[in-house]
Amino acid sequence: MKVSAVVLVLVAFQAAGAVQATAPGTPTVGYYNDKCNCSVEGIVRDTVKVALDADITKGAALVRLFFHDCFVRGCDGSVLLDPTDAKPNPEKTSGANIGLRGFDVIDAIKANLESACPRTVSCANILAFAARDASRYLSKGGIDYAVPAGRLDGVVSSATDAENNLPGSTFDVAKLISNFTAKGFTPEELVILSGAHSIGRAHCSSFRDRLSAPSGEINPYFRDNVLAKDCGAGPADPTVENNIRDQNATALGSLTSYVVPASGGASLDNSYYINNLNNMVLLIPE
Image 1 (cartoon, helix red, strand yellow):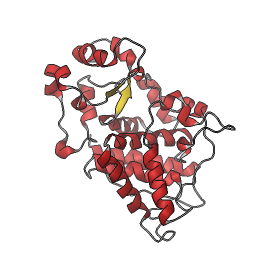
Image 2 (image 1 turned 90 degrees about the horizontal axis):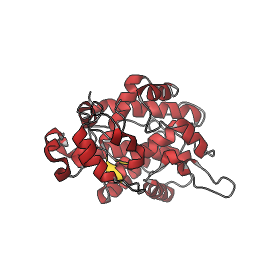
Image 3 (image 1 turned 60 degrees about the vertical axis):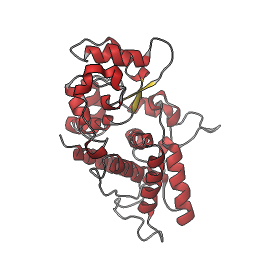
Image 4 (image 1 turned 45 degrees about the vertical axis):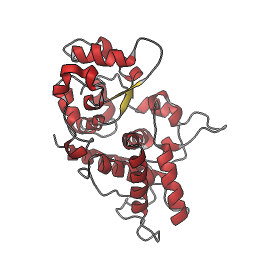
């Protein structure tokens, strides 16, 4: 499966989100061309590049942030809202959103855009642009696509909504298919979207059940000598790299022969599927 197929689902997310959170009319590519005397998407791209040059892990964070925004109430930026006295439990406080990062990058983009084109560009559109640009950066240009814009920022954000909508880390295939079908996605698109797990990290609490999974579901050496040791037995909840190529080579031992090199330095690739076939992924394989 070509990694470029991930684009299909990212674009599908934009379309799904647009239905719920846009100004009148159809979202359009180049939406801000006649609204700002600057390149809105250029400012987003340059700010994302600065952030990822300083900390490349922010790239996976932005892709995940976009997914967690779109899957709840559509791509409306509601995942960005902070708690207030009146609304103390927005989406970002949900356990389903544990470890969400990249908010500082969105804030930096918003600040730069407010200086260049005040009170015009929604955070919902910023998040969609930033996820695209992070994907381009991490794939060395292999993933690139036009982003229709015109989304309005949502004003409703609920931790309960996040918990009720986002797929659980322990969902089996049947539950995942049901969860994604409810959002209008096919099983094929579910598999395509899962390819994003070639990047990023996961909390041990998200896959601790895998530490007792049978050998037919997970490589036993990977389970016992890599994941179990990384997670430990205590109450701490450390994070572990999603991709075996990003994990400690000494701990992997002979499993290093299964590592899929990042071609041309592109980390967002199809390695997740290969790791899945080899039973060396953190979360329950699709």
